[in-house]
Image (cartoon, rainbow, N blue to C red; front, side, top):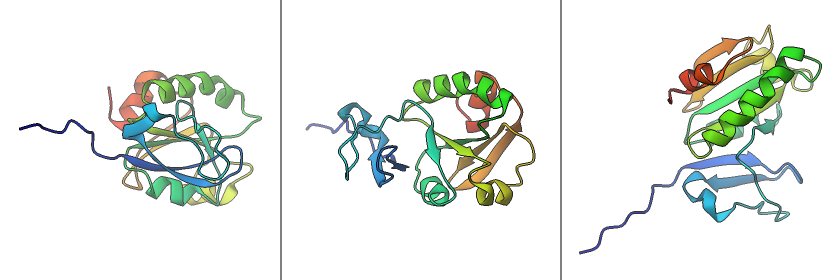
Length: 150
């Protein structure tokens, strides 16, 4: 008798950074190198994914793993200081968590809906619902605590 060692599917929905098409990606199959269904370009989940007011809810509710969202603005110095830590977190937790970035200046509806008053604000979601939040600079340990991984 043989047993299957396949991992259960862990789908997420991400926007293609090149053509903006929504793509369903199985995080259990990241080694296959996911590509956009519309334009065929690679979908790199080892870095934060940009989202907008238009695609935020679909991306958030379409995720089977915890989602960490960085609410930021391009002009914000502390936000720029956070970027390397978020990049590292996305790379280390690829397949375990999805990291998103939402520019609060360009996407005021979502920022307002979540009561973003200071940036950077990092919110962790699980099952589409807010799990935890942190305002200000955060180190790797803080990010891991927000999504519940160590």
